[in-house]
Length: 464
Ligand code: ADE
Image (cartoon, rainbow, N blue to C red; front, side, top):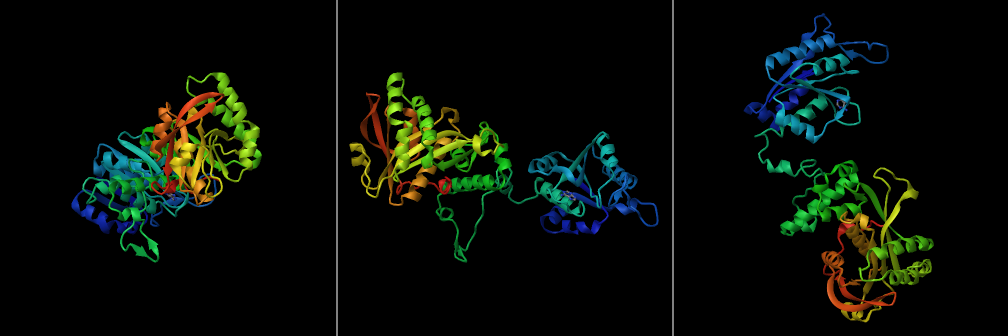
């Protein structure tokens, strides 16, 4: 690749002689030419700027001087295609995608570094009309530098390191921020294992490659969610696994194709009506086909009434977590979040045993009871169900530290639910009969042991 840099401070680019850039310049991967714009002036003062037309502060760089300089370097390079990059705070934000495109496709790059109030607009306009020239006005970010030189160095370094033969280990490029995954890169650590009382995360020293891979993926997702939510909204739907979606949902994101914000919070004592409404709406969705409507209606009226939830909310051993979805990705209006699902867990006093006899035997001491876990079908496959369950587990542990297990009963024919709970560490250990409106249902009982499978760190401290 040939790069021509034109600036009134050519000495600025001495930095391109150092490190890998210098090596690449010497190796023939890269040909760089650095030019002093003033060499194209014709007056004794070597003037490159004039007052802005229409008045105002600062000076504008003259198009005639720039035109001569750019024409000459384009002619000299003789490339079929030239990219004329113009650093400017009003340019399009520079991205990894753009620099990759340059590295892969640009044979000749000219960087025109403006100073003062920038370069007369007609320069960009003129070269846009020239065949074989593409103009790229780019910005490094939402801040103003003294001139385009720093931005030019950034563009050149980001582009050149992607050229074939530039870096020793091309694999190191693949896992980087923005590359392929569209996520920020996970944090890196090296020896010593302890430094100023800070440890390397133990998983990185475990030697378990799959665990290391999972941990890094989780860190990337959480970091991107915290620092660059815009990148999360831009993710392609097929870029995410179910486990990724669960982590993102726990941190407030249901990315495309759902494109919604989500949050989790503990239901408050005054919210019995809200809880009863969501419970009554979701219970019928989850019922097996054989249950008649009147039996379902009886169950809803008896067990899921506002009165019933008043009692749950008044009980200090009961935890209700609500999952709420915003009406649109950008809309943050407090009042319009809709309840998408909920969990109800009975933790009881220390030593509490769940009411079903089989569950008591199966689970033993310090076992909570996941009495309800329902999510609107609209959010199926969004990761929200898994996030809601793990966030509820985390809240349970935070509020009731003596709890070491949690048990549940679910209809034995509900394969989807059984698979879901199995995936989240619940293991079958018994049966029970569950009555819905006077009709007997056969349930399987399953228990998750938090000592065997810990609540994931991504679910901690999430519920409000
Ligand atoms: N010139 C001045 N500020 C700039 C910025 N933020 N990006 C690119 N070029 C600039």
